[in-house]
Length: 155
Image 1 (cartoon, rainbow, N blue to C red):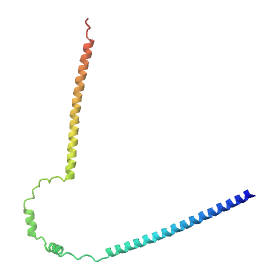
Image 2 (image 1 turned 135 degrees about the vertical axis):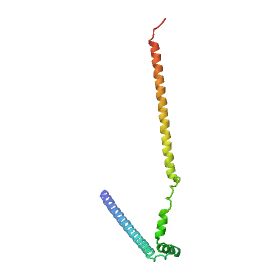
Image 3 (image 1 turned 90 degrees about the horizontal axis):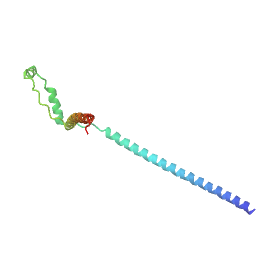
Image 4 (image 1 turned 180 degrees about the horizontal axis):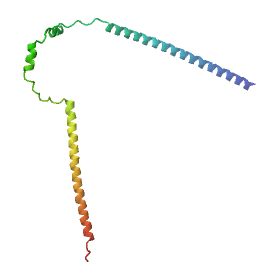
């Protein structure tokens, strides 16, 4: 009988413990949802404030024209080439071809790399020729040694 009471008491304690755990989990989830909602609202406010700031920035009035630039554009519009200036322009000697300007650094590096590649290829070609001539020389030497061995054996 005592054993039965202990079992019932243990079951009741386990059930109560499980209920407490469920309640704690439920409260934790509620707190988390509340925090997530607060964060979402905060970010929405920030986003709205940012949008409002961008709206104010882009809706400002355009800057006035700078007088110096304004005068230049007027002068260009006023000047109409006359027939005389047109004729004098074409009656002049044709422009002399200019010497090519030095290459920009990127192009210079590209040209240097190309030149280095050519040099490497030329060196490899020379080395290949030397190897072939050395190979021929060694083959001839080997043939000479072999032919000497085939000769009459004197004792």
